[in-house]
Length: 80
Image 1 (cartoon, rainbow, N blue to C red):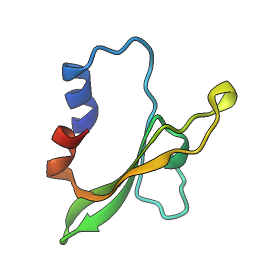
Image 2 (image 1 turned 135 degrees about the vertical axis):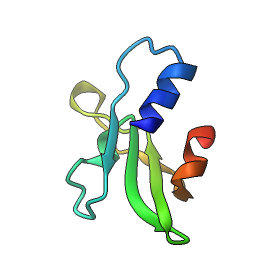
Image 3 (image 1 turned 45 degrees about the vertical axis):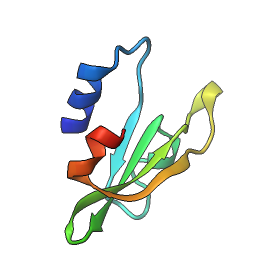
């Protein structure tokens, strides 16, 4: 929620952006098909994420590509 609020404050959205967040190694939230996908991981013992971008479903279908392999959450908002 903190990341979504950060993005909302800084970037005017012309259309919906699908943000998929999961900690499940089985991809339960399908982070690979979101416009932005976050897969939870540990980074030096702290909360972190693998970041993927560019996924889609339906007519916009496609698999996201990895943008950041692992980043601590406190560094994520400014990098995104």
